[in-house]
Image (tube, rainbow, N blue to C red; front, side, top):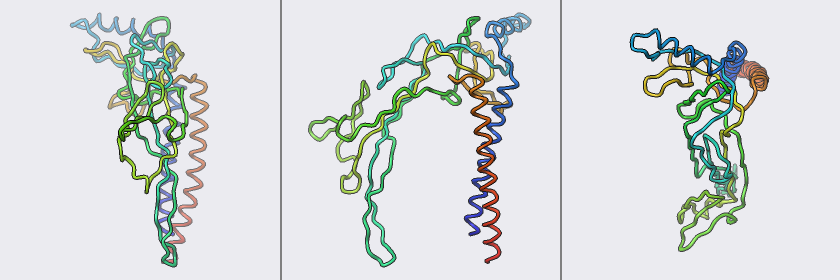
Length: 280
């Protein structure tokens, strides 16, 4: 009982932390006024004009911008064929795995348990900007953290329907996506494939986005919108196809639910921990 109570308390603490993070997001979204990209560029140019070297390197500000995604070298989805500045393609194998257990009488029991595993995951990103009509601002997400993509494909196909092969070599394909499964990858006596789930997400080009982050003048790449650096890491970074109102509403709801679950688990954890200590 004691350990169960401690585990519940740990989960409650995690949920409370996540609720505070959602509240922080709401705070910064509400508190940050929308800036025009043209006005940001003008300000940086004025700062640069006052510098001895004529550069504004080191300029930083936390901003909110709204515009449309622009990309000079768009990428094409392997499964959907839709174009985007970022494309994520994922293939998930749905399987049953054989498991053997012994019951209370010592009898060996065999069960097939369903599970999933990712067999392919590929993320591609092309340089992209946010264009609000007054100017373009390059976005550098540093690995995609904070960039919300739109799911354009989620499709399940039974095993065999998208497989082809010759000489023991099996190829899995969907649209322009192909991957070799090799031979003998899974032992059919202990693992059998039920099917595959194909998922593709993109950052659509030309669609409206809401963005919140640190705008910085860099020496190598010019003016960028990026995740806040070390001294401002608590401030959120996001690029989302949702409106500001949708983001606030969703984060407030998430914070409320997480806080409620944290309280419930916290109370239950304390009760079980106390009960466990009493029984010792």
